Image (tube, rainbow, N blue to C red):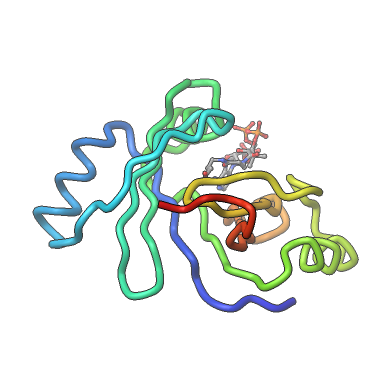
Length: 140
Ligand code: CMX
C-alpha cells in the first residue's frame, strides 16, 4: 500500500469545548475549525501540528460510532488516518490483502476529504482511516 503521511489522529472527547480549551491553553495550539459531520454523528474540532492534524470528536448521538466508543471504552484515541494518493485504488489493494473494509466506497469526511475506514479487528485494534483530499469538495 502507498501511505504518504499521517493526515490526522482522531480523539474521542465527551465535551468538545472543554477539550478545545485544553488544547489551546495547555498545548498552545489553535483550533482553526469546528465542523459537524452529520452522517457520522459527530462534531469535530481541528488543530494542526506541521502537516498532521488533531481531530477532536464529540458525539452528537450516543448511538453513533463515537458515542458507542466512549460508552464502551471512555475518552481516548479513536482512530488514525493515513493520507493516500488514490483512495479507490488503495482500498482495492487493502481488500486484495484480505483486510475487511468498513467502507468499500469512499464517503465524505470532514475537511473536504474522501475517507474510508478499515475494520479495527484487522488492524491490531486500531481503527484506521485512509483519506484523500476530495477534488470536488470545497475546503474553507
Ligand atoms: N477503535 C478500536 N476498536 C473499536 C473502535 C475504535 N474506534 N470502535 C469500536 N471498536 C471495537 C469495540 O470496542 C468492539 O470491540 P469488542 O467486540 O472487542 O467489544 C467492536 O469494535 C465492535 O464495537 P461496537 O461498539 O459494537 O460497534 P460497531 O461494531 O457497531 O462499530 C465500527 C464499530 C469500528 C465498525 C464503527 O465504529 C465504524 O464504522 N467506525 C467508522 C466510522 C467512524 O468511526 N466515524 C467517526 C469519525 C468520523 C470522522 O473522522 O469524521
